[in-house]
Length: 244
Image (cartoon, rainbow, N blue to C red):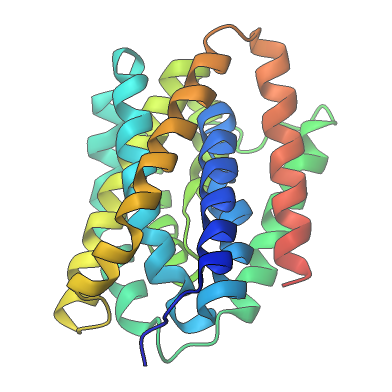
C-alpha cells in the first residue's frame, strides 16, 4: 500500500529535504542520512530508500550543476565502471536482504576512517583511477541498500586530491548516475510509480534550494575548515549507522 501523507507529515518532509540538501551542499555527503529518518518516520521503512533516491537524484544533479566547473570527468568515468553493476545488484536484492548488518559495517568503516584521520596513518595510502573504479562496486551496492554511496567513496576522492568544488561536483555527478540506475531497476520492478514522483515533486524544489545554499557556502570556505566539517559529518553518520 502506497503511503498517503497528512499535511503535518509533508511539512516534516519539507524541513528534512531542505536540511539534508544543505548539508550535502556543504560536505558533499551526509544529506541522505540526515533526511532518511524523516522519511522512515513519515512513509515507513519500505518506501524510505526509494523515495530518498528520487529526491537525492534531484539534489545531486543540482549540486553537480552548481559545482560543474570543478567536476573531474575522468574520475567519474572510472567510478561508473564499478558503480553501475554494484547499483544494479544492490537494487535487485534491496527488498529481500536485511540492511541492518550492512549499515553497521558501514558505520565501522566510517568511524575507522575518522579515527585514522587524526593519526599519522594515511588511508587509503593511495588512490588511483583504477582503485576508484573498484570502490565503485561497494559504493553502488551500499547506495541501493541504505540510500547513499558518498561515505564509501569519500576517502578515495579525498586521497586522489579532490577538494571543495572538485570534490562536491565529482561526488555529486557520480551519485546521480547511481541513483538513475537504481530507479530504472525499481521502476521495472514497479516499486516506484508516477504517483510517487508527483508526491515528491514539490520537495524537489527545496532540495535544489538547499544544494544552492550549501554550494555557495563551500566556495567561501577555507580548505582546512571544509575538511574539518567533512570529518565531523562522517563521524556523525558512522555513529548513526552503528545505532541503526
